[in-house]
Length: 156
Image 1 (cartoon, rainbow, N blue to C red):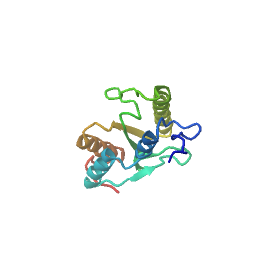
Image 2 (cartoon, one colour):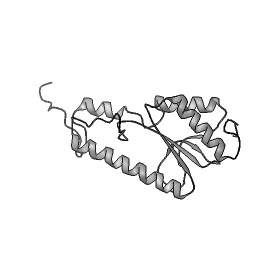
Image 3 (cartoon, one colour):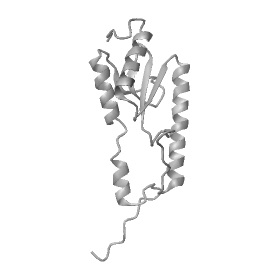
Image 4 (cartoon, rainbow, N blue to C red):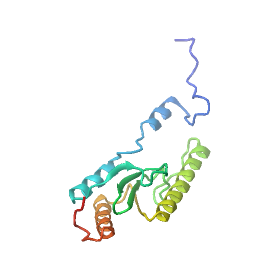
């Protein structure tokens, strides 16, 4: 088709190409593989939790796992999107936009931590590259302690 112009991103879009746009839209914001593995391990140890839920009704942010009775919010952060000090690599394409986006994510994460801690919640953050079994053991132990029981004791 000769009359068509090349692909143009929508006005104000961050996408540098149609392929990049499709790729970025396919990235999951929840139910990532690290999240699913940690959830399975925690569930197998007897704990029950809410998935992708708001710990505080007035806070427009969701935690990956929420243990309401124990007031524990768990976040499994992606290395790129949350600026992992070990694995974050600055983008080569549109670096100004993406670096600023990651900086805003980091600032929002710190603000979320402060707001939850101010409301009496304990925030646990893990990087996606951390060993899932170690993360799950930490979660089970902390939730158990916050509930006043044995760390391994399942309490719905």
